[in-house]
Image 1 (tube, rainbow, N blue to C red):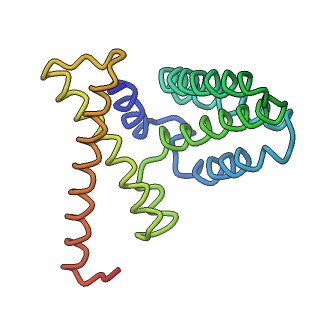
Image 2: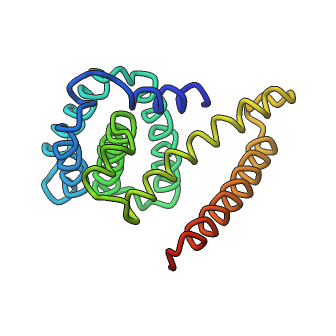
Length: 192
């Protein structure tokens, strides 16, 4: 998990065309189309999925794509199994699952190929920029926590207890960092 996060954060400094500042608006358009693709039909979702997948492979995020596919597949398997057990499985559930994968790939493409400086250049130092900056910081924090916990002997193999510990440590550290950042902004005269 830590390797995938590290790869995604390192990919932000890539040199392909999709990493350039001029590609920011097309990537935002792909996210908007992915979100709206549920209303455009199955063929639009599949077309966007193919485009997002091709761009992720072009950007060098094959491992990230594999992890996104694995997590989506696991989630889809659970949802389909529960719907099957309770006899509520319909075609709209399948459409929603395909829509979720299309959206996940679009968001992964944006995260893996867009450094915070591009978002700041487009939006300025506002709330959306700070949110994206905190998202990047949160991913870096998870990566550091996983490495630290592995150094202490945790394996993160099918043990829910270790994931529970990771989530608790992550939440605590992130809350402390947000509180420190809020105090720093208030000290500079920025009131919320």
